[in-house]
Image 1 (cartoon, rainbow, N blue to C red):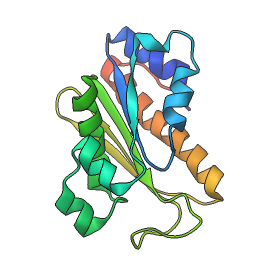
Image 2 (image 1 turned 30 degrees about the vertical axis):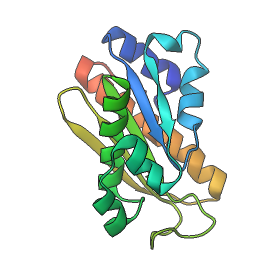
Image 3 (image 1 turned 90 degrees about the vertical axis):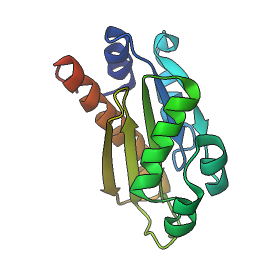
Image 4 (image 1 turned 180 degrees about the vertical axis):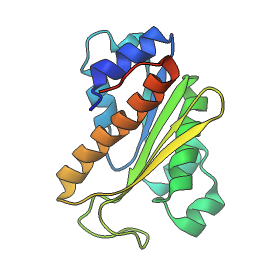
Amino acid sequence: MTGPAEILALLVRRSATLAVAESLTGGMIGAALTSVPGSSAAFRGGVLAYATDLKHRLLGVDAGLLAREGAVHPEVAAEMAVGVRTLTGATYGLAVTGVAGPEPQDGRPVGTVHIAVAGPDGRLWHRDLRLTGGREEIRGETVSRALELLGGVLAAKTGEQSG
């Protein structure tokens, strides 16, 4: 598993930066990253876009996509990642959107989570998850899985092992 300190070390070694766009995690990813001393060397900041309209207004997620699919969709996560990367001038954008519960949202069951990473070369990486457990378990697992995806992307770029 890749933790915040490892993520930040990989970013610093690459002279790269990161910004996050969070929905269901409510700032937990940013909090995890900024708990590491020296995180400002690689962490630019983030956008907490919990409401669907903010995903469009702040991150540039296509309004038609949101109207058609709702906020919990793989393309929404991808557009959030690109949007936060562009907005902050970061090398990488990491985004999460999903349903932590207790009720389904936009026809998506509790535990549906989409994670995306937008990189400097226009490449996108994503994970679609179906998590189980209560609200806090789903949110915590989302943070872990988001950092794991980003760590894998960064390690692949540097030829290192993550986790």
